[in-house]
Structures are given as structure tokens and as C-alpha cells.
Length: 180
Image (cartoon, rainbow, N blue to C red; front, top):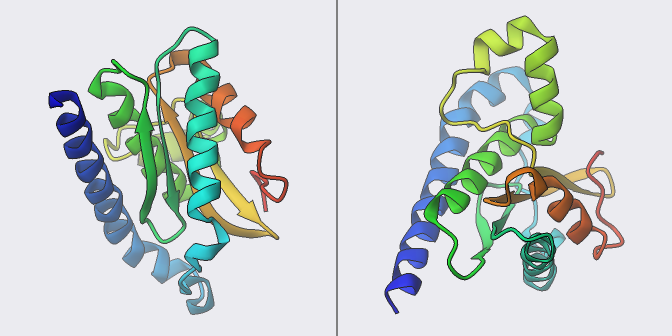
């Protein structure tokens, strides 16, 4: 029972953190992006059924590879749709999944792509590399549907397996892409 309460509290904190990051980044994004891109994305573009399916599949994939993990789907508006973790996972996995979510919400590309950009783009690294709101370890991917950014799938706690777990799970959604 205690583990369930701790997980629920972690999920609530994670949801609040993601919403806080979106609120913090929205004014900056609005200044550089035309108003039309500020439209609210319909939550129906990533259904609860789809979100549950890929979160569960992500965790199962990591467990098959010998890792415990947390996974979450957050819609393009920054609202947490589903969060789940392996039994016995420490809170670090959920925290890293949450930070990866915030990272993808900000930049709309995978954390792997951003990690590579940090290595090759000194200006980007200087501006964002030390920002504690973001985490660039591979494991979070944007989800696009018909060219429109609709959600983020983030996996944390599975160490170097996080990204492969997420990508394997995304194969369950025939409409999902990680690029527009």
C-alpha cells in the first residue's frame, strides 16, 4: 500500500512539474512562433487506450531486457495521460522520465537527438546544457500523428535500454511517428 501511495504522489508531482515546465516555456515559445501553432491539440489524438498500451509495452520491454522502468505519456498540451512503473522501481526512474518529458515538450524531438546536438552545437549546449529542467539521456520520443505533434512517450530507469523500450512500444501504434 505504501508503494502505491508513493507512486501516486510521484505521479502527481510529475504531472505538476510537466505543467510547470510548459507554463514556463510557453511565453518564450509564443514570442518566436506564429500564433497559429499555439492551438490546443485535441487529447483524442492520443487516446487513453493508446497511451496505456504503449506505457505498458515500454515497461514490459525494459523488464524483458532485465531493467525496471517507469514510462509516461503526456499529451502535446503538457497534460499527463498515463504514468506507470515496474514493481520495485526507485523514484529516480519516474523523475528521469518526467524530466525527459519536459525536454521533448520543449524541443519536439527525441532526447537522443538533443543529446547529440549538445555535443555538436556549442551555442545550444551553452544555453540549455546545464538547465536542470531538462534531461537529455535517450529514452523520450515525440509522437506525431499525420504530421502533428500529439504527445511524448518517456521511459526512465531502464538505463541504456530506455529508448529501445520506447521505440519498441511505439510500433504498437500504426499511426505513430517520431518525426513530423
